[in-house]
Amino acid sequence: MSSEESEKSKTLRIALDELRRVHEHVSKAYDQLRTKALAMIAGEVAIITFLFSGDKDTRIGMPEDIASRLFLFAGLLALAAAFCLLIRSIASDGWYIPGDMDEIEQIDNGKDNRYDTSEKFLLFLKKDYLESTRDCIKILNRKGKWVNWGLYLLLGGIIILVVIKYGGIHT
View 1: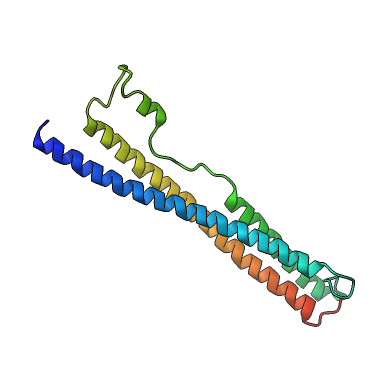
View 2 (view 1 turned 30 degrees about the vertical axis):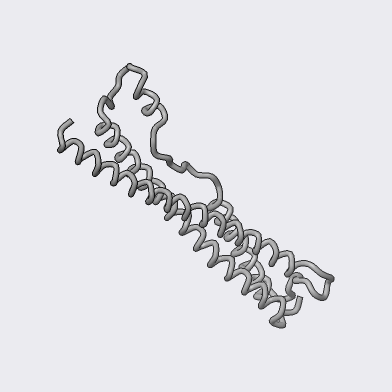
């Protein structure tokens, strides 16, 4: 093994450590996003329960005029859309984990060993980490947009329903 190969292997190991750190960071951000979405769903259910519970005088009922009914419908539609977006954002998705198990299994079995040097295997891992992390970032960005839109719709729907309940609209 020449010193150049050794230096290249060291550099690849450093790069892999950095890629592992980045992938772990992206995975934690994904977990946090799902936790946030779940908390918003729980909050939405609690607020809806509060607004629509109680006796006839304290809960939200059907408003008398058409404009107020449309306003109520818009609030309920916003809450339903927020709920759907938030549920979709916590649904399982094709999360990518680097390190193809089939490829790794082939290393020491003597058949079709493409990774006859540690450098070739490190290059394979580097490529796999790059592809996996890029794909995971795309998933994280997409779901992040869903959570943000879910939050906007949730806030809009809650404001509308609170205005109906406490704003003097007769039901």
